[in-house]
Amino acid sequence: MYLDPGFGGMLIQIVVAIIAVSGAILFSLRKKIRAMFYSKGKVDTGANQIAQNTDVIDDDVIDTLSEDK
Image: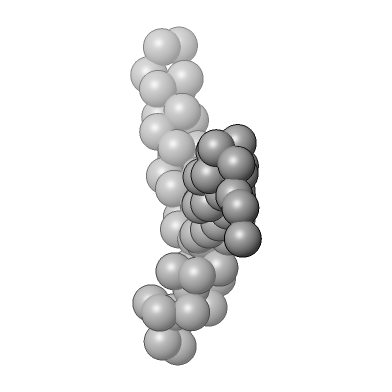
């Protein structure tokens, strides 16, 4: 069986493409993958934390605006 030199380059290119596509898929799904390992009973903590942070920011803005007058 004869394999010409271009075939080796094509195999290397296929392997590199598979690695690149796998990395892109893992990168785009990283939040879901982390959630599988670290969520243990925690549900939607990001939204709760954002809501708490905006309450603090609103209070600070109101205090700052009332002090200026």
